[in-house]
Amino acid sequence: MSLALAIATGDLTQLPSRRDEAWRWSDLAGQILDMPAISPVGEAEGEGPFAVLADCTTVVVNGRGAERIDLLAGQTVALRFVSSSDGTAHAAQMVVTVRGKATLLESYEGQATGYLAHAGLRIDVSAGASLERIVLAADAADAIAVSKADVTLAPGASFAQTVLICGAKRQRIETHLEHPGGGANVRMDGLYLISGRRHGDITTVVDHIARDGTTNQLIKGMVRDQGRAVFQGKIMVAHGADGTDARMGHHALILSDRAEVDAKPELLIFADDVQCAHGNSIGALDQAALFYARQRGLPLDEAKTMLTAAFVAAVVDRIEHEGARAIAAAWTAARLEQG
Amino acid sequence: MLSIQELSASVGEKPILNGLSLTVPAGEVHAIMGPNGAGKSTLSYVLTGREGYEVTGGTATLDGVNLLSLAPEDRAAKGLFLSFQYPLEIPGVPALTFVRAALNAQRKARSEDELAAPAFLKLAREKAAALKIDFDMLKRPLNVGFSGGEKKRMEILQMAMLEPRFSILDETDSGLDIDALKIVADGVNALRGPDRSMLVITHYQRLLDYIKPDRVSVLANGRIVATGGPELALELEKSGYDRYAA
Image (cartoon, each protein chain N blue to C red):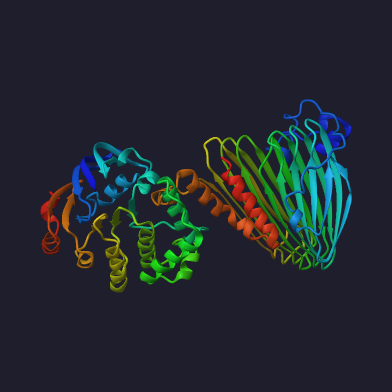
């Protein structure tokens, strides 16, 4: 049951719905009453947000394009998923292999309205390799878009991810990672900035299957207007996966009465000798700090933007790739300033 | 400059200010003294427009402009500054970034050009040096992890940068050792001038040894109950507030 399957078969009953626990907060079935036509061949506008940083760029437009990327040591590759046709549906598949220290700069670009898009990725990081994956998902406000990545790591590999989303009619970036332990290292961060009537969902599952692995996760976000954010983070530590160190933090700001955040942090621990922690907080901006800033002359909106930017900055600061960090910071500032 | 007439205000259901009247002409430093709970901090918050402080009567004008109808940021742009008794910590925002944003927001509100980065940094360096603030401290998030004395110095630094027409110093002396008190007082005195006025709120006479007021008023039960010259502060130090407390 998935959006990809529904698009491929035209069968609406394949859409995940409220009845599926994992989709409880991001129901698709209720949003898609007719399956649109399959998207035609399209053309991407522009060069994408990461063009200046990339050694090479792979473009997938309306689900069509390359289906495999092999990342070598030292490479920085941009991967663009572009939706360019109004009101149509498409699904893409991508396999990414990593054999060294590399960076994947992935963008979802809504260059049309009302589309349905699904991207399925399989990412394999081989022994000793490390991948930093930055995902910048900028879908159209009335689009329904899902990206699902299945990541496997070899022992001793490392994987660091930062997902930046602004929502859509429904937007979900989902990552499943099988953690082999053996000194492998995972960072699984995310940032959502949801305005208007957008809905953005960051879902992650990290499955520690063997001993001595670390996972560190920091998700932060802001919702305002009638925006809605969903964070589902599951970390499982299997029986025997001793020595696991897993930390999850999710912290959200709600800036209006009609905005909503649904969070489900889950730690499922079946091993004894582990260190696991999670923290979850949802609140408003500190009114005293807001008054302080206004007393100094900052208009209310500017003060809110400044304090919100400061609140979410920690996620962006953890991006290792300097150029990507700068682009993420600029994107964050621009999203916050758009009223 | 500042004119307050019959000002009444409450917090929740509780009246705190009860028909307070006070005039501070241009160029004057006016000290307000009074016992705990007299309404000193409430006065500063009502004048600057903090939420939760409801004005129930009276007026307050700065240069003839009705302050009470303005948003806090518009009062600031008119030149009203409050040095907080407990300055807030602003995590994630370097002090320099904060002050520059504030300064340029005020200038924009007054239709003045923004201060460019080099000129701003030069100004910040000068003012920080005068207040013996390590410039590197201004690169850290504002007030986060600063000591009480450092926070108070940071307030005066902001005041020096923003050059307000009217400053309210709310117990700026609390938490300061004697050396810091002198530095802060020098900073405040440097801002005195014929076009500026200040309201200095304090419990103790001590601060007034360093910031010499033109007038001293006693605030008790939400009203000004006595006004005099600097000698009134000395008298209060001796006799206490008891006779005003009834």
